[in-house]
Length: 360
Image (cartoon, rainbow, N blue to C red; front, side, top):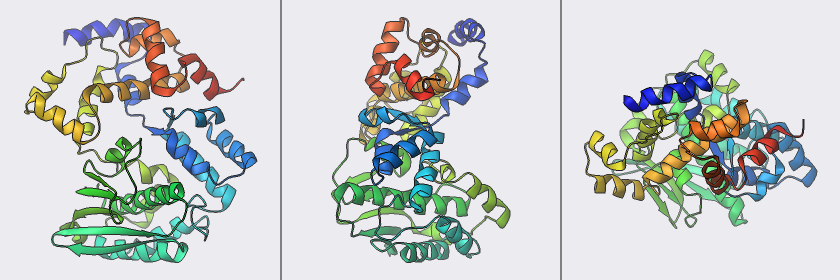
């Protein structure tokens, strides 16, 4: 409580209410890898056009550690789809023409349960795509959705797997009205540098170098009823694709639990120690460290991600000075914030802000 009281003068000086801090911390960002993969099949002119539409500076494509807001990535997905008339980023030899995903949603809306809905979804995608298809099968008490992917280019094949799973799992979760927890996600490719993104997108239990890309979940969940209606479908499609790739992200992992716990520390100079968090979670500190490592992260890594996402939000969406943003994020010296942000994004805070806002 003392730490919270000390933070109040700072928040008051910045004219930013505590609720605004929490809102900023809930702003999601997307790895630049997915931006680059989304525009990889566009011409140079078309790439510049869709990046401009989404408000993403093209220079950031050369900064692997950069992030963009979820809103920007959603706008990019739509812009690429319009450019190619393809909702699957031009990955398959057959275009998934604009309106295909909406048509698929309408087709599965009246399914009796999730089992029928998933099977219809996979059949529908098989009609839209030639080189990527999915299959639902049961293995003991697990339901397994596996992908057959015949795309030759390795990078395109990997992004197609990622996109296919996001679309199928996101639609499943929406139809059921809740996240369908995945017991594991297996990938036919080797572990990529950005694999930590997968713990939020899919599951904290990841396997690489598997025979097929697949997701696994409790087979009993297939009996869940479809709870959505024509009215809720309109809203879902109105906010797609962001509603698909963000709304039902994994919130059950230790990483997600720790992120939720640390969100309120923005604006507070003293962050809790890992030992304190472990006590709150009723586990030993070594256990918490081990579980975070298994998910490909660490306490410091999560803390930095939260501060990075908040910094990006404030740089892009507020008039706060860079010094004030650094103070809000707990940096005692502006130079420390500059060094940290350069490490996170590959650019200085002022440079990043100018790139996002443009010369005007």
